[in-house]
Length: 124
Image (cartoon, rainbow, N blue to C red; front, side):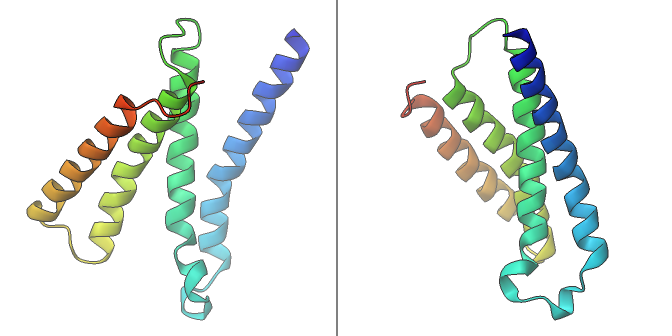
C-alpha cells in the first residue's frame, strides 16, 4: 500500500513538472502569428492548468490528515484560486483592466464560488 501511494505521489509530481515546462516550451517553439486561432488560447489554458494543479496539490497536502474538505470542495477551491489570476491576465491582455471590470469580475467569481461551495453536487 505504501509503495502504491509513493508511486502515485511521484506520478503527480512528474505531471506538475511537465505542466510547468509545457508553457515556456510552447511559447518558445511557436510563432503566434502563424498559429490557428484555437491554439492562440493554449497559453491561457496552460496557465490555468498550472495554477489549478499547484493549488490542488497544496490544498490536498495541507488538508490530507484533517479530512475537513471533501474532494469536490478541494476541486472547486483550486479552480477558483486558478481562475482569479488567469481572469486578471485575460482582462489585461484585452485592455479591460479597469477598476470597474476587476470589481465586476470579482463579484461574479465570488457569487459563483459561493454557489459551488454551498451546493456539494458530487458527494465524494
